[in-house]
Image 1 (cartoon, rainbow, N blue to C red):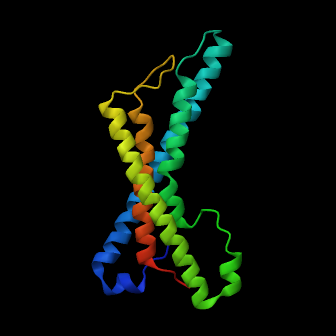
Image 2 (image 1 turned 60 degrees about the horizontal axis):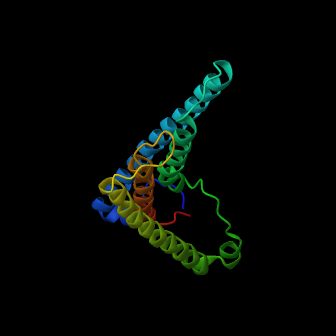
Image 3 (image 1 turned 180 degrees about the vertical axis):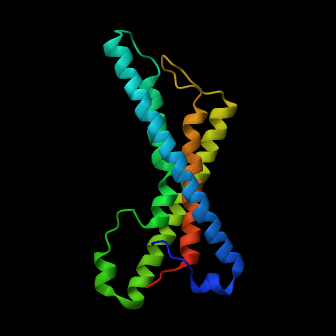
Length: 174
């Protein structure tokens, strides 16, 4: 689904329109967080290269930090990608069917995506809570706590779930 200004449902129910606008704004904000995380990962890699090759010193935290930040960036930006229709979609069969069949196939795909993201969000929050309460660490040389690395998974999956709801409420504008 792609972002549209208004939907018939949003025009009839102002609360629905407000929810869609709120989620669009939150998704945009999360995209900025994703950009910052990606830039932080790139900066850490540049630091690692400088320290390792220019100064001849060993590095301990940069690789792990980069994995966490770039993965977090991908997850935090996922709701924005859904909102703007930037995801990869193969719509050969729905396009061939056309009409009501196409709409039903796209709706079914969105409902399956929503269910998957909701299950991922639930499981991710359980995992973050376990890491927090168990004081889990990564077990590496740097050995930071694990919950900050897991938090973007839970937040990103939650935002993606909520954006799926917004997209379903927005409907397809053609």
